[in-house]
Length: 135
Image 1: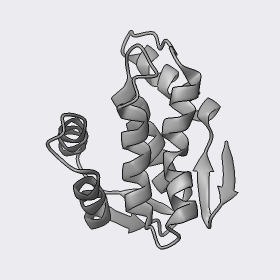
Image 2: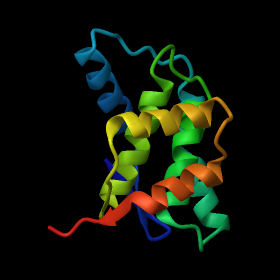
Image 3: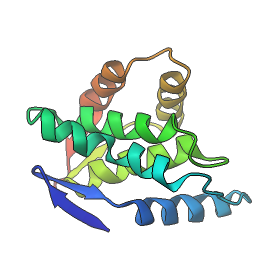
Image 4: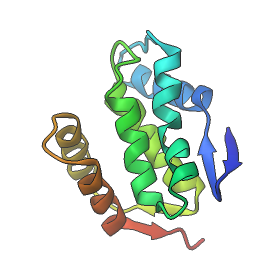
């Protein structure tokens, strides 16, 4: 599921698509992938940024990953869900967790897609609410 690089663990497209499909099935929806290349490009947006911005923090990269998937419309339905799954997976596999309510997170993610919140604002929200996982 995870490829290592740039000091971070990165989720792969198949794993995120599988998780998105399973999640959507629990709601009675079927995931339809319209453009795999667009999906992969959205997912890889954060890892590409990390190559050129080695100082980029986990929260910023998670925000880029969310935005890259949620705004490319590679899926018929569920782009925001897939983006959220990818960003949250990225945070978790890198040893942290996001401590927010589901409703609050949904509002922030919708605001980003609607252009009411910048990527930097979303990254700031993530940064303020990311904590290390202390097993």
